[in-house]
Amino acid sequence: MLYLAKRGFENIAVSCQDYQALEKWLEENLNAQAMENTLISTGESHNCTMIHLKTTAGFKKITIAHSAGFIMSKIFAAADLPAIEEIKVLPQSILMNMGKSGGDTEAVVTKIAAELNAQRITIGEAAYISESEGALIVFLNDSKTGQYIAASNSLLYVKDNFAEVLSYLKIHAPRYLAKAYPFDAWHIVEVRIFDEKEKYSAQYRRFLQAIQSLDLGYIISEYWDREVERFSLPVGAYRLRLLTFMEPLELKIMLMALEYSLDGPRIVDLDLFYHQKKISWRDVINTKEYRKLILGNTNQIFGKSSFFAEQSNKAAMVRYCTNKLMSSLSDKDRALLKAWEDNIE
Image (cartoon, rainbow, N blue to C red; front, side, top):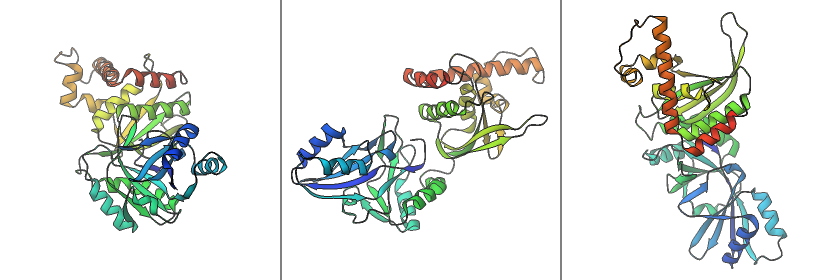
């Protein structure tokens, strides 16, 4: 999940005497999927609906990749369904990404509940909410297996306007996440994307894929801007603020590698800013730890100030960065990045 807080799935509660027949009908006609240990498969969760189906053992979670309105219209129009005792729309969910597992999720749940005057409930109790307005806040741990993993047994039900709650959580998510991890566990950085060919749509999608494939961080905000360099015309820049668990210098290494396509040519500029200071490749190579990894123990013929030595150092760093990137990508991830690069070059 690329965002700390995002619009989640819609919710419907259904009671039916022959719930097994209803579940079978949903599977055959709407490609429904039962969820056990996870809440929902990764994807466009705001286009998905979770059905809370009442069974003899409680409520079973079923997800369908359609809106709640579409599903209800199909159910009402079906002639071969068992009698429905009750069907109602529940508040839509907001997915709160708690990042990597191991954080103190309980501290975040308690903090949000107090500030938003939210009611703490379980996933089973959500089906008993009588109102369709408000928001259900679901806490998740990030997973690269293709599914969101529940980070807490508790949900929060907020009666306020859904859009207002979502907007609030997008702004305050980093503040809440600070309750879950040590102060130095993560950093907020800014990445600026520049493309001379102005193929920003493909560049953006490629970068999103890279964030997900390489576990670079989570998007806090994003917006268009323009940069004005001395003696040049203004150029467009797309800015993304990321919350990352990487050290800024380590992130710079990945960004520098991503400036080059998998075939070799440089296709984009990815500038990194931390505490409003631009992180340069020189900051990386001049750090003792990375300098030894990049240059080894070889002696330079020229001094550090020499133009030729600097160009040699930069070339060595590019090789180091690209090799590190390639070793971090699976074959599937390489194919996904390559597909977007084909739309850029």
